[in-house]
Amino acid sequence: EIRLWNVNTGSCIKSLSIDGHKQEIFALAFNAHDKILASASIDKEIKLWDVDTGSCIKSINITRMITDLTKIRTLLNST
Image 1 (cartoon, rainbow, N blue to C red):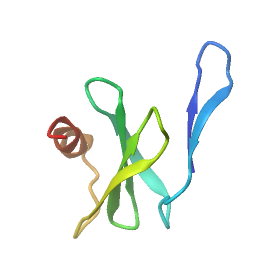
Image 2 (cartoon, rainbow, N blue to C red):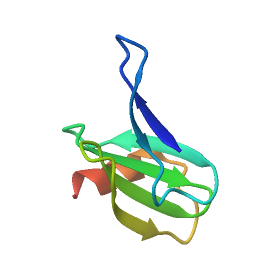
Image 3 (cartoon, helix red, strand yellow):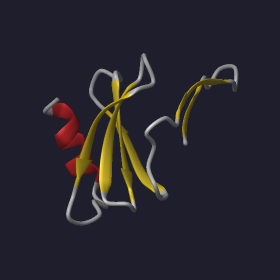
C-alpha cells in the first residue's frame, strides 16, 4: 500500500492500494508535474499512479528489478 501524506497536517490524504504490488515496494518517484507517481517493486513491476484519482493507470512488467531512480524518472517523463 502506498499512502500520500500532507506534510503540514500529518494526515493521510490518499491511499493507493487497489491493483497494488504483490511484493515490497523499493522505489517511488513523481513526474515533473507531481501528477503521476511511479512505484517499483520486487515483483518486477512498475506501476504508474494518477495522483488525483488514486488509480493505477499503467502496469509495466520488467525483466529485472530497477534500482536506479533515474530510469524510473526517465520513464515518467515520457508519459
